[in-house]
Image (tube, rainbow, N blue to C red; front, side, top):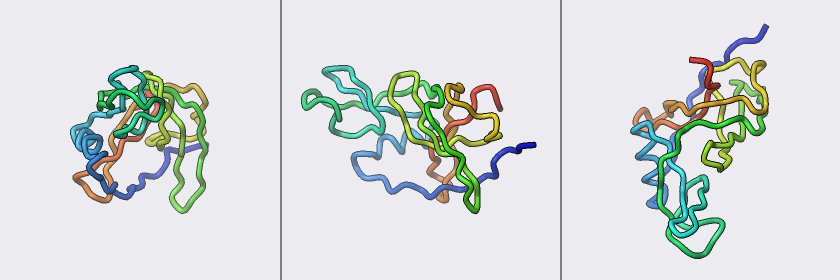
Length: 135
């Protein structure tokens, strides 16, 4: 019989000027991705330079926070956790953790949704994902 993963507290990020909008949005419960203003290509993590094109500016845009598990691994550490690539509905793949779930129930293609997990700085939550059908 499997059980939910124990809660773990991730370390807080150290935002720099280029990532500050992303982390400010996370404090408001919003997930942002980067989009090239000229080509419309989206990427994650958002950064000031488009990883695909030299032209156009990058803007931070909201993501819906829904996706599917592309790949994952259950890490059997002191505090077990699941690391995964989630393919967002908007297209980019994001490396993240899957939380609040039974790891035995996970599978590639499983729908997931973003949740904001408290870090060791209570003012700065971290976007992670949980199965969409679980609460």
